Amino acid sequence: KDPANALNLIGQAEIKLMVGDLAGGKTLIDKAVLMGNGKNALVLMEAAEAYIHYNKAQDLMSAQNYLETAVKLDPKNPE
Image (cartoon, rainbow, N blue to C red; front, side, top):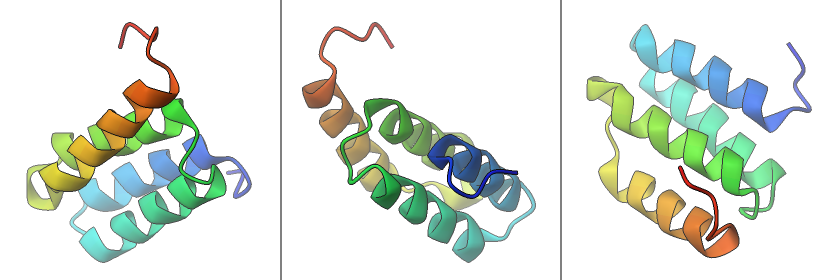
């Protein structure tokens, strides 16, 4: 666990979402996105995936916003 690593926070958020801790998961996602000042395309993509993959935590509007921003930041990324 490296609390200074945004991708690690996304992974921790996914675990929280998986076990039903929606508030905890969303808090960690928000923190991870803020760590990159909303300008880290990889973190934004991973945050979007977390919001899409866990049915109880689905936040498709946030996921779409994160993905649109990620595309603007890194338009050549094939993902």
